[in-house]
Image (cartoon, rainbow, N blue to C red; front, side, top):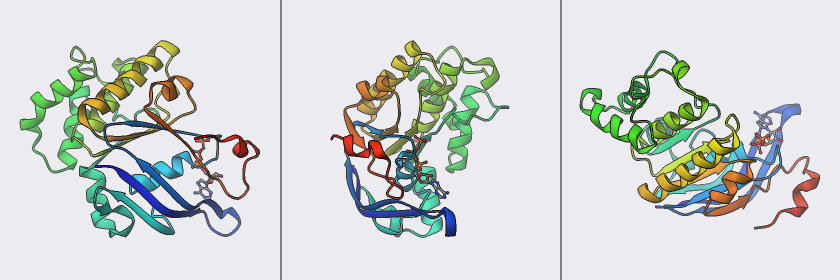
Length: 231
Ligand SMILES: Nc1ncnc2c1ncn2[C@@H]1O[C@H](COP(=O)(O)OP(=O)(O)OP(=O)(O)O)[C@@H](O)[C@H]1O
């Protein structure tokens, strides 16, 4: 199942902060592949992730995940898609401070309507798949930055999403860990077959991705570096 944006126009803000970010954007993101979303600061990478993740409704256009147009759903349907079909790994992981690594995953499952008692073994397996089988009972303050990112990745993938959206995964980790994390994102994407979109400034992440999309926004004002964009 792929993700396809068609004729997507997005405007953010109101009145004096009103900013046209995309106009008539077409983009396709294949299943089982990592697409690196690149472009200068302010070019719309986070905005595109928000539109793809049903967090922001475009002014116009379709955002198809398989045969579902996320842009056409009502608020309740969009919330359901976010809980059940889309995994998010946003900056710094957003882990809950009081919960262990296992509980981070169980909480996500609970919110999606699963019964955690049955999920404990699966959570342990999911953490083992990101190399954290020995850290199941650790809370975020007992984990390293790289380990926290791995928990966030395991949590984002726990409900077997069709779409995995990642924002700047390597911003807070050193170069070796960045390469390991980028490889892990690729390995998990290929193994699960999900559509993965990673917004990044990091060449290490881009190098590990299967494909690259240069973000075409923002339209007003258009950044000077925009003209150097290549496919
Ligand atoms: N809520 C908002 N109201 C008005 N303008 C906004 C809003 N959010 C973002 N923008 C503008 O939209 C454009 C795209 O922002 P976005 O955060 O998507 O860029 P980005 O490529 O992710 O940047 P960075 O690499 O710095 O994270 C920017 O010009 C930004 O100023």
